[in-house]
Amino acid sequence: MRVLITGGAGFIGSHLTDLMLHHGHTVLAMDNLITGSMENLAHLDGHERFAFIRHDVTEPIHVSGPLDAILHLASLPSPVDYLQMPIQTLKVGSLGVYHALGLARAKGARFLLASTSEVYGDPLVHPQPETYWGNVNPIGPRGVYDESKRFGEALTMAYQRTHDLPTRIARIFNTYGPRMRMQDGRVVPNFVGQALRGEPLTVYDDGSRTRSFCYVSDLVEGLYRLLLSDEVLPVNLGNPREITILELARLVIRLAGSSSEVSLVSPKDTRTEDDPQTRQPDITRARELLRWEPEVALEQGLLRTIAYFQQRAASAG
Ligand code: UDP
Image 1 (cartoon, rainbow, N blue to C red):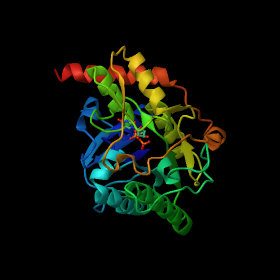
Image 2: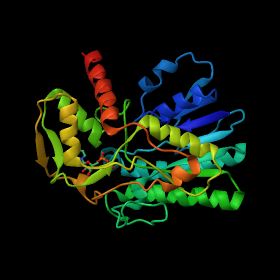
Image 3: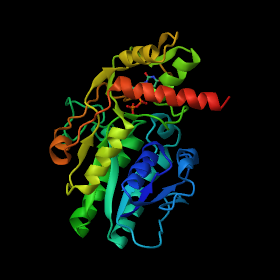
């Protein structure tokens, strides 16, 4: 296949690029580099089946030649980013999807939307199956991300129903691993960076909120299987092992061999407004439809992530 990956210089996009190249496909990676980085693709310099296109998907997308698939990952998924860039977040989640779908239609390409567990908002059903419609505050600080992703899903289904476009929707739950930005603001890079620097780990409020963390290699395997499947309805992809943020902080300190302490802090800004209390994917559909299941244990994935950040800190001097 010749595939376009938007957000290809990002954390998940670059790992997906590697996986597609590994399977023998040709990859065009597109990114405006607002949050993505060429360092994530540096190892592909000179690769004969790889090319990079710098472009902002909120503008119409033009690609020459045939395309078999478009994997639309361009997004601003860190709460810190979308609180700082709310309008860009809404544009990429709406106009970006519209342009990518238009291109898929023009090329007769398969389309995969990277959606999110944030469509469930602060969930009232636990764990979350795909049939749950969610509990989202449209006008809260997270609304810019959540509602644009919900719009993206609606638009994707409209193209599927109206134009019979072969579309796929992945609802991605918290994912972590190498190539996350140290300054990303999300909990895993924050905690790993703090633990390695010997600083207190900033656990927000009382640390009782829960999340379920999926290692990136498992996640991209799920995306690949979903792309190859015939499933047009949304599929949750994530690791069902649920943990409180306080437990996560203690685990990171132990695995990093750090002397850091845990510090309970209540951010004064909107960072924790509408912050979901719990989150855990119900992956029954992914298991049955894709024969997919995460394989990397949290401890194992965190050790690899810690090693990555250690190496980055060392090479930065
Ligand atoms: N969090 C925290 N300390 C941090 C960063 C995040 O306690 O330094 C909490 C945050 O309030 C949320 C959870 O960790 O409850 C996961 O946050 P993240 O930003 O990684 O992703 P989210 O799942 O909220 O999109």
